[in-house]
Image (cartoon, rainbow, N blue to C red; front, side):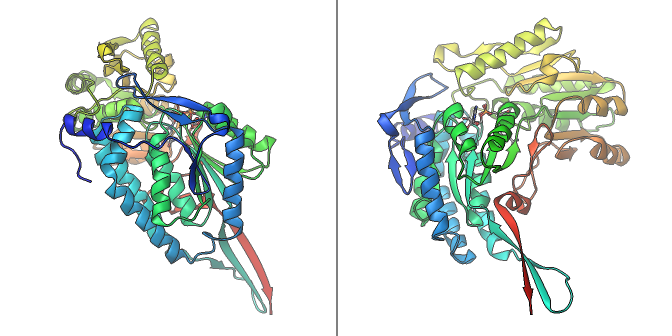
Length: 498
Ligand code: NAD
């Protein structure tokens, strides 16, 4: 399908969609028991798009049974890796073929600019699925150095039934980071999309079936966190659960595991990532452009957004002026307009939450340099102006808590040590960046910053080949790269005497 190049083209595509709104269990779309549904809204207009099957413990149990059956009879796990690879490569090419449709689904479901969904989200889904497909027939086991008359092999086996509970900010991409590696190694999967953004996952399940994925191997259960999500966490026959979302809910999954079957839990949680610009950063235009993108891309609804700009006093004013200029250029607009670079917040609750943080910043003494208000209210949608706070102190709420919106906090520091100290001064440790021309400072910062990813003279560089995950309360385990396979497999040792 061609990608439209105008607002009218995208709107026509959105209007003509045949939206899948039922759960996908054991290879078929099904209603929830008693026909329960929940409303799915377009955050750019406030209008209802459809009603989606509302799964809870009943449907989660059906999905878990289907997934277990599929795993036990080895219809997927038992295939030679090259056959699983062929199916997953076909799935990747079907996603690519439906790029425009999936991109517009993401846009109307969670408010992101459709141009970003088409250029970033969906291509990355394709690459993720294809990369794990390609990896899977190139992994080998080990033989231990045990001596004569005995052979000890160490093999990795799929873990069984894997649940994936994902957020709404990159709905299909977050799903692909989990579903891709989990399926590649032979697991059965139950995917629970966020209640704000279930539509692309439901369509994806159908594409997976069309690619040749056997029934029951991928199930999608849309529903709310405290019901469907909790039921997955507590289910006695789910072997592993991979979660992306807030730290508060991540902690709940550790509890669910302890209260049920000690299922393996992997957590990708939030962040409050520092972007340090030292006085010797060099090209401030580049640093400012990266800093603006780091906080305004995807409306700031990005776990690794550079939400704290930590800047040395001599370059502070020059940097802020440049970032403010970027913010002025990047005003919110209709997500279906290909020129729009800042879309709508995912829902009214998230908009109100972000506006609440903006209020707290003002009442705690920070200074708004640009933005700070709701925008385009006449549209019925939930838009917020790109916002820059100056004079922020590290103890303020806006410097400590994850806002998950287009709100930048600028903290001025005196020197390198102070910058690193402030950078490490939150409960999070997902990512960090430092801008300097001094190689020693760059290396020292990379050592001292407590974060799973450190960027030097860039922000947001990213590839499926590198692991991604957090220190401290940003999570446990890693997504992406071959390291992700560690959480979807378990290690078996076999001793053979001869
Ligand atoms: P959230 O934690 O509210 O929800 C995430 C998922 O958990 C959703 O599917 C939701 O239905 C489910 N959930 C919610 N409450 C639950 C409960 N009581 N029991 C079980 N499941 C429950 O997060 P969100 O608001 O959807 O997403 C934003 C958060 O995700 C931010 O904190 C962001 O930083 C984080 N995030 C992290 C990464 C990463 O890779 N580290 C990536 C994207 C988003």
